[in-house]
Image 1 (cartoon, rainbow, N blue to C red):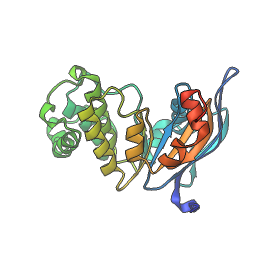
Image 2 (cartoon, rainbow, N blue to C red):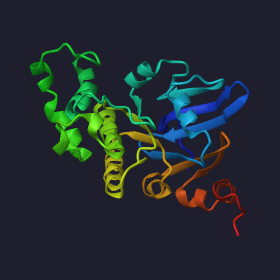
Image 3 (cartoon, helix red, strand yellow):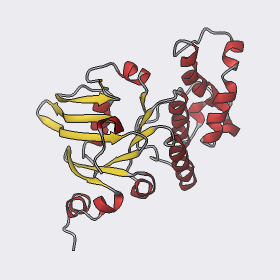
Length: 254
């Protein structure tokens, strides 16, 4: 069934990025349906992270447009895009290493107090956010370490903390760049369940190398190769596509 315009929350048209003669992303069309988990996959160098950076305007496209919830967001500042409800995580964990886990999540929650960073507020004012911060830490399995400095966490646990801070921003749509990278199996199961819970009332677009995660989570998968869309569909459809097999394995399907 073809999705109607109202069903599409994020749409890219002709998205292209040329880095001084090297075309990292070429003429990408992408439509993400509201309330779904949509995965962006492809072999190394396919342009997945560049595409994410274009969608969230951390880099500006050479050509093409991005619409979010019916609004042209091409060229908007990433912070303004986030305020519209489109929030992303990064391939490299981005947390405040000198703050505790609780403080990291509380920083994200502070936006509801009128601005994103009320570091000068009294501790009593910020304490009102503690219960919600702890609930988010509990959701990602970090509640027992709430007073630990983020810099002390192993890499996989930092990724879990980053997802907690992303959720704290109450996004309508989450862009997750390799959320399972560096995680142990138990952490992968926990974060997979968290993403499923998050997708019950929001949309998720994720770049992910772990294909078993993609198979279990995503309703729609877009495959990139050499910066272009190679295939799109369900996991079964794309995994049986000879061009996709060729791109991943470098050999024809026998």
